[in-house]
Image (cartoon, rainbow, N blue to C red; front, side, top):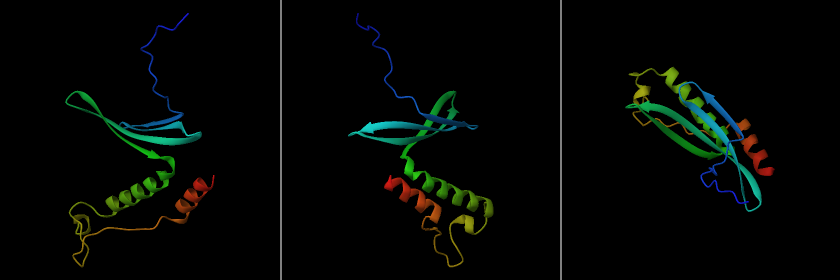
Amino acid sequence: MSNTNTSTSTAKKPVFRKILPGGISAAVFENTRDGRTYRSVNLQRSYRKNNEWNRMSMYLDHQHIPFIIEVLQGTWQFLNEHPIGSQQAQGSDDSGEDLEQVAEPDANVEQALESEFDA
């Protein structure tokens, strides 16, 4: 007997999901392409606007997570050390040049990436 239920969703379910207050979540998906299985991450923020749910999503490879963590930690530190209205929070330093911190990944990030690509 054939299956007549054609409305079944073919969307994959995440192998891991973390949901935090404020509509922030992350989900890990496993995918296979050309005989290789890899993982991707979906970061999502859900919010209500005008009585409708909206979602912002960002997909990335799991090896990018250390970079995301590092950039968010640096941003969090800046926001907490430089209140709104301070000269540095306005985007310039004492020389009048635009601020932009460019940093090499720390040893832990580099090690995580090296071990990922060696696998």
